[in-house]
Image (cartoon, rainbow, N blue to C red; front, side, top):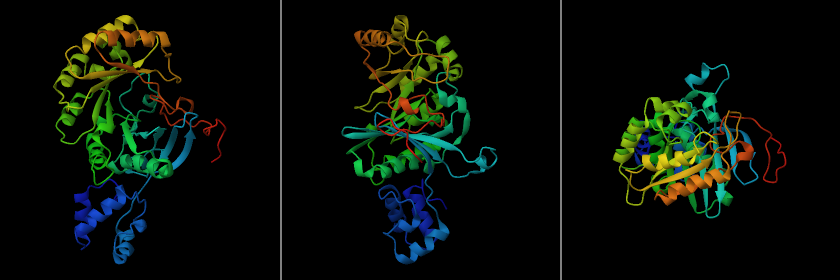
Length: 363
């Protein structure tokens, strides 16, 4: 049995099946998610007899680090090899890979994790879309992307950890596995990351938004808007043809916000595509009936796609129109651009790894 990704109740049931007291499951739960143990032999809070027996009954599988790319801004992109799965066995290229990005800052670190290997949503400005969907990740594979960087950087960790589900994949198309992982991430007795510090980003999967709204414990929600009308959004985000703006914004209007919460809209700035003053005014009108919103303007990160960055002047003019009309807007520059770790750049690209000083690293 694979232990990583299992809830406390599942681990209790597992221990009972072994003829052990249920509370042993709680001990394993603590070892996995607080102790960050990557091997059953490391679970030292169990009696010796159970530790000797456990390797024949269970495993803890962390991904392998296939490559590390350290940005000059301090961010680190990890290319992770996932365990073999039935789906991977049918692929000529072998087991799937996925990426996670660790971004240290003063007083906190942010980890950007993936929820699928590849992505099926096909946003035209995103390099991940070029991969297509390889497969969904399991709860354990999602959790490992948080545990592994925390363990690798444990000597330098800041007090606060922020988590963003903005890597490869559409989280709401892998809803059950994502929520299983998030319940452990948000559990004060496990990873203990506050819901205020966890953000799930979606391209606008309305059924998933409606399901998320019903969860008692959930992360913050961010919507990838990226366009000011349906025609524009259809062309750069084909998912809009299934879930057009009117329906998406209606779902957002119904979404229950907690007293401390904003609904965030992300807007990737594409030069000459969606960055005009009229685009900004249309965005204001789109969001007019929503309460407690904010907009993050994200300069497009370069890749081999037929787009270019908006000028700083266009971005600032866009931001000013929103703010002047009562819509809080902020420019969010992505980190890790030099090692293809920024928003929209995660495409399993093997580049020359560099260290924080810009020199090549050896692996």
